[in-house]
Length: 150
Image (cartoon, rainbow, N blue to C red; front, top):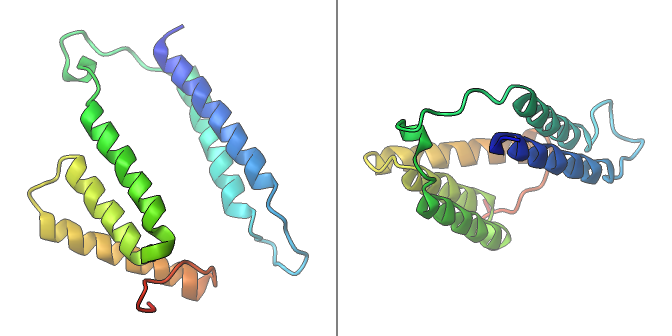
């Protein structure tokens, strides 16, 4: 079996585990048609379907001399994993907006867009603040504020 199919199986298993966890969320009868389980369930179903799709249609393997066949960039993978660990550590302490801004900006730098530091920072702040506003004000879902109260 090709390696991509093993990856697809891992994705399906992860999606099934995620979906099982999403189904453990308690739902009150006071919620409208869309309760707190809706989005986690939708995400879990999407993950499972993505894995099934990848298993069914793995695509052609890259040509041996193509750039896609080159080895993985383990440094970028390690840096991104470290950045996610920092994000998890900062999430409650620094708040959603600051932690997410650092994650988005740092991810853009790690993944290769080092020419536009300021532009990437502005986009990261705009996305973080917009998502924070949508969740906290429109959906009434509490996200950790930054230490100075935003």
